[in-house]
Length: 123
Image (cartoon, rainbow, N blue to C red; front, side, top):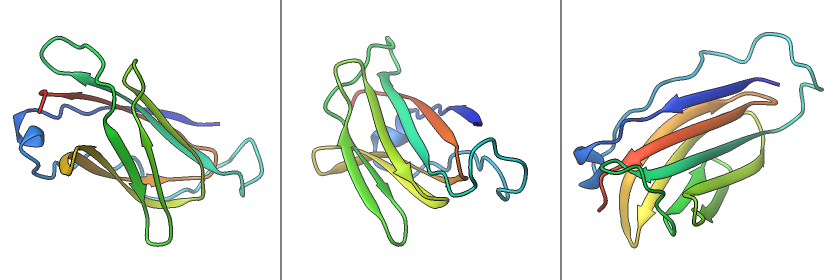
């Protein structure tokens, strides 16, 4: 199983709702997999205040592809998790109320566990 971690420096521009491009984690999903190639992956993350690193709770997280949409909330530790995602391109949106405060695109391969660490200026 491959674990990939991104530290996403979402600074003031994110708090103003503008899209910030995140890192592209890979070009394709070629390579050996330890489980069956049909095994699904997951996206997870931690959202914190950029000024003091305190976790931000009740941030809405939406994971969206062309054919799938899942949503969750950050917990008291700022953590979120969306599992059982098939290979593909996804956009991750973080929202406070109706306002998008951060978004990024990722490519998820079979068995991937992608972790986004997102420090945000408190909106």
